[in-house]
Image (cartoon, rainbow, N blue to C red):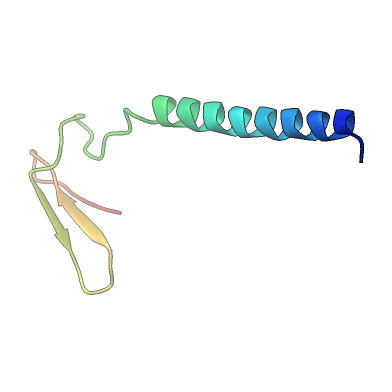
Length: 66
């Protein structure tokens, strides 16, 4: 493998890593407003049951399970 080929591989790996990093940032930015409760407010109470599911109680009394 020549020096020029190594250089291309390093640039390619850097480009792939940078592209994955930017994709993660965009995914996090786009998904930041996924509210648990329908009114968009945070839940009042959060409980975890024995099976590992989390139960959220909203302001209007509804229960949401994740």
